[in-house]
Image (cartoon, rainbow, N blue to C red):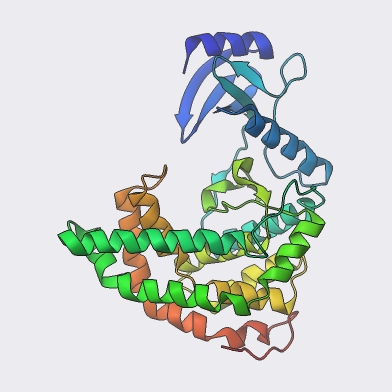
Length: 342
């Protein structure tokens, strides 16, 4: 970390910085005023967005998120050279564990509280095009990217263990993805889209387990507001359920308990719950990890993607059983009775 930046921060924030430790795309600061996290942005607009969003969410009652530290003049954005820096109070917590159902329910509850607060933000421009969900656009692009990857592997032959798995799973993964996208028009996504625009709802759009921190007192915080934007909030639920179900071995009981934990705080209609279950037919875990690795996106590494791909292959029959068991979803209170339509 730039020594000039450290000196400037000490002056602006009237503190002494004793140590700096890099972590992912941020730096941890040990100061005489506590432990802080500093993050730099290339664009001022992004820094303004996250700091104002944090304040708005806190005013709306969602306190379990990042809190920015102002400098001596009250500013929460610190410009230095070609970057705009923000400083957050460090949250003393561990990353949530999707293999723990207790953690999963905590993250579902925290996401619901975030969604309750993340409403009433005027939409600057329409989200989606002609009523088409942004989520489906992203999924179409991801599937196309995966098809290009599999074509390249087919041309030169698998070069490693991961490419062997990709070649083996390519046909069913592509088929599942295409079937989901082709049948998506049957899902009530357009009303959800228009409702999101009308109510000004925000979605987090990166509800990975590392963005939920569980404190020693079992409070759960949702962090990293960089990806938050106007969107249908169901996209967060689909993403959360997809990620956790893999480590929960696609147990229907885990899905039901997680959705109940969410819906006790933010009501979900039968139609919304059914829609989430239907959208889980898209093989997003496998496609996200493979395209992330081959697209050289930050945070995707060969070893981690290989482990996930092997786990998805191992649990393939469990996943299919989960997708076929939609009629079990509404057998438990408070959802009532519902007859699944395949």
